Length: 272
Image (tube, rainbow, N blue to C red):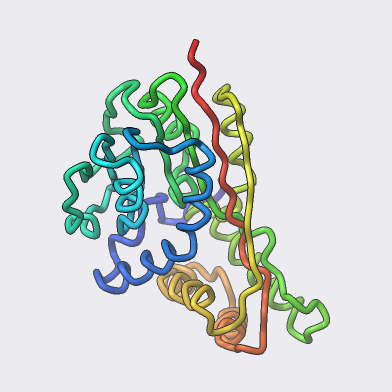
């Protein structure tokens, strides 16, 4: 990563108002949960499993996992910011304030360890995965889900503002990556990470969609852009015209674009 952004890849959501950030994370969960649930079922999720969730956010997947594993199972839902998890009161679910980069996890305890939209914020994502892997039982599954914005482009390439939209979008994303704010292109690297960890039965899939201005998916992008706007303006990441164009097209129901790709990758810890 290049440059000194004044940002240290810390979770910026802690600085956002409570309800604003909860609404943003709730909408993100609504969009991502179906893909995550399919991937977990593909790993063989079953009654009695012990599961570790790192970066549990508003706890939507924690609740779902608690239902899937039943009273015989156990869910440990971790986040550095647990303010949205404190309402979870389920007998087979434990909430922990935890930083996966530095805090200890029980060794070889879990059947499934999972994180989503977390690694892109970490300067050393593989180290976090190593810590999660150490918490897995032999034969346990590591599941990771991250976005990749490389696909983002206008639905209609003949639209008069298609090129400007693509250019402004990727100027923004490259700036975020190059200035070490977070890596919005991380998703494409997930399979390689799991290969480097020498996992078995590695799999990877991805999903995306066409979204239109004003849709819930694009309103989430507006919220995210608005949260970053003070930093972007202070550092001159985008011009006023480029910011205005993104906001205008995000709000225009007549403008569609290919959304980011959501990658999921999984692998099994060797038993020997």
